[in-house]
Picture (cartoon, rainbow, N blue to C red):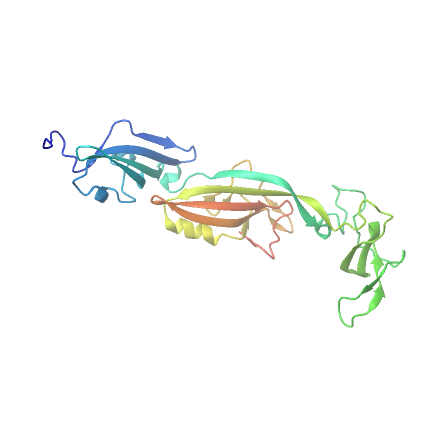
Length: 280
């Protein structure tokens, strides 16, 4: 028996009731919308990535992904995922940062400890190695690092810290077993904080701008106009050193007509030295 067509021709797929819009809480909105279409027409022409949602109130949502169910009687069911930035958030240009922090300990050389040469009031009454090096007590014989290579008696600081010369020079290690807590040690556990997060931006020029800030340090939550850190993240500058937050990684992927920018930020309690890292 021949098909008898009545009602809407479905040449242009029709949006069905029950479609949804979901917010992630940071400004990214997504919609899952179901359409009915006629399989005898070019359904794929309707499914162009970046096409606006048919509801005028949500036209800022753009087509990202879709799937089709081929039904009976030349009818298909099209499920479309749309994505966009809420116009009420940053004028729809970018989402707010969705950032998490990881805090822990990592192994660092003892020579990088803030109490190694000069006494830091947060630690013991004397520095670990100090800045006065003598040959009394007698240090072991060591090869000089610079030509002419020769054996010479080393110099000793606090806790059996052994150096090549009387003004420090090459650090050889902790050589006195009379200080068992530090004898033979080379590393210590230092605190480390890393932030990872992502934002969505609507303009590729914003992507290029953020990429341009890679390996730069800031004293605020932002890199220029791009807020990448939440209010609870510590910020600031260490006098004589540099800003404390370094943008250490930026990765980009396209999502609908948007760009998802994944980033990593490294926090340094002592600041990122402004003669090594660009401070902005």
